[in-house]
Length: 416
Image 1 (cartoon, rainbow, N blue to C red):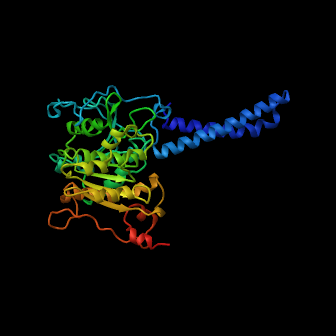
Image 2: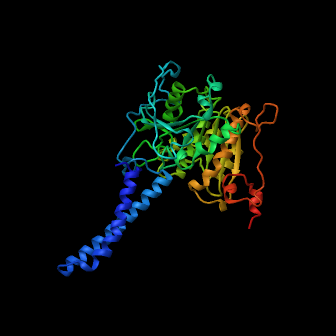
Image 3: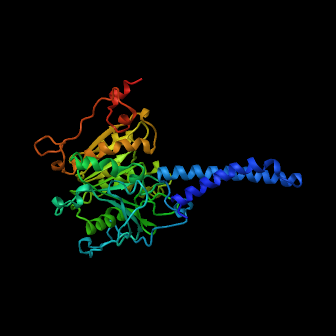
């Protein structure tokens, strides 16, 4: 029975009802020696507590998409078939442009949220470079199947969850496709192809999106295998011009790191409540070794770059949760690297999905300007040049506006 499936949830609800009704009906009717009656009552209480805890956990898990499968929860599964030493560029010397095209089989994903806005499809991808075998979720914009766009290549955004986290969370919890679809139809946001690959590849540990010979090649999975699959199966724009990566929490760290490390693969990145030092995630594989820690820190990558990478970064954060790291990256950036920092006041909430959900539209509006997609929108300056959205005052703003990053720090500081 699936951990996130409706049958398992309904079974737990039924068991919880039974667990409450059983002691009410049987408590005073038990017969036999006192010790046996006491043992039976203790078992009934334990059963009631166990089912209640299990039900709450499943509801929280389903709401936040923390664990997809029993293997994810129990730490008994792996999605790594091999982890060869692929070298500094993560290709292992493979000529990527000579790899034969592979057509994937996609199926529609079940669940009301996953079927909204045209539906999300999924495929099982065997990474030819990384050695990873895992699922990838894809959503196509409304224009994709329209005759007027039949010969049009579309920009792509890879979506990365936190840790623990499911690749489905961007769709089922943040509702990224449901929020953006109407804006895409209205021409306010570019028609992005949204791709969410699995990032939880090893049992009980965050890969940190790193390549670790003999353990996992998470970087190559995300920056090579997944993009190659998208280009083979969909009308996607070439990299790096039409490619971006976005993430929240641990996925935000990965997004910034991938963009800074691979400017030949990504043009922009969105980091929501991210960090630079892998040590900020104790379970990160990249934090276990000093060399890995340095190699996967976007701040140090920017600082040591011989030539500043031509990438644009959108970094949002709260005090002591991403904001300071964002400021440090902005201070270190040199042209042509650009860094747009959005301050989120503490009053907007904590490190939870409710904080990141309102940030989806502002972040993708910004991405539209950075990926040169102004012809799809009315957000340009009228001269064909992209413009960065201004940062309005937070005076009188509601919580959603604060969480979305449409509030400036100076104005937020004036609020009681």
